[in-house]
Length: 115
Length: 115
Image (cartoon, rainbow over all chains, first blue to last red; front, side):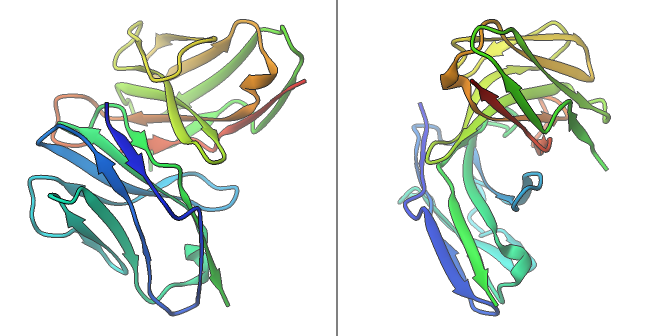
């Protein structure tokens, strides 16, 4: 069974600064997908970024990027130039194979951007 | 845009009641999921379905059942609600299995309180 660990329950950062959220996972699979989902207060969960394990290049989406270390089973999310709208719960998630199967989520990190 | 809707945002029920949570998606997705979200535990998969009338147990199916009579609708049933089922319930859908990757789209959630 896979496990996903987020060791930072809460974080806060000043607007415009850079913040990194950590995530580690454990699996015996060789091919899998990793995700970061964002859940703003009282709003729906949305996908922020995904990484395919067989791709060595780190994924980026505008201000969001990941640091994927496959050997260390680490998958951190970096948010650059943070904005007030980035305030949310962030969940790291894992899916085996094609990424269509059930997701295993971490416990989440509550990120607050301070004006 | 994909839209996943859930029948209620807030629901209050009494112990022993039979509870139905409804989820509808409008994008002809084959896969549908029910998660439970609790503070400090993240999201945990209750059941998922990859086709009409098909269902698979997730990580915490005890005390729950599901029904998928139509492709667009996936219902979560609490046969006899208990106080430990007080939680936020999230529904999600994704396009299909057998594809390289398909994002899960989430509904707004139903916050259920069992008294």
